[in-house]
Length: 241
Image 1: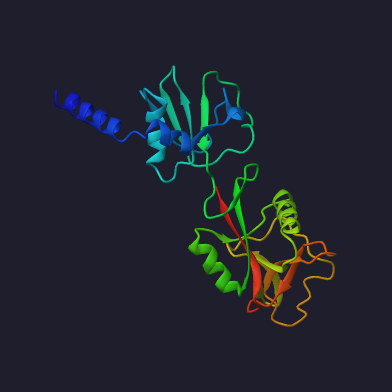
Image 2: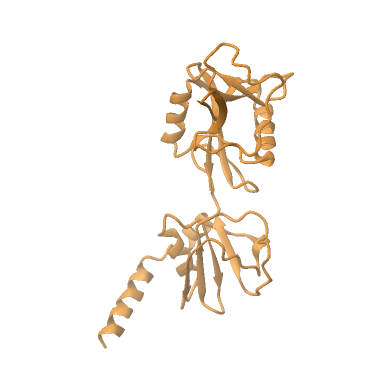
């Protein structure tokens, strides 16, 4: 009897904490690309007995790690995911009845969202040093931009070209020297898996050029260039979804 009462109290609390229908529409959107598909690779939970879509959305809404969720109305199952899915799930068979919902507004603070990459970008045309730029990005919940592959690299170049001439746009590259060996790494410590330098770069032309940037000058290719970290340059902030 006591267990039944506790369960009922919990259910009532869950009803009170439901997200409203209007808030649900503002927060979540149905992703038709994933309809009748299920990806369980990065789940936070797999709950049964979830009687409504609002209940499922409320569970995800109350968890800061939840970026998306799957819901099956007939099975009354709710699966919360910690990542924003990009493209159809590989190696998954169709499972009828599943609906997939993602955050309808992925970026805030004047950031531009790229759904394919699952990344938010923002170009800061004002000029700052590397350390100042990083602090600005972090204050916005972001970091100086890194490009993990050619697709991201090409996208950033297209964005820079559309934004107009900036001369330099700082990214998250830093130069390290160990036993005389120079290695370029992202601020995360990772070695870039894909890099394209401007012809003749990096050249350490003005000495102590230990930071990276996009050489955003018309007539050039907008590719990587090395720069002194104390120089004031425009910069790009980035948030992964």
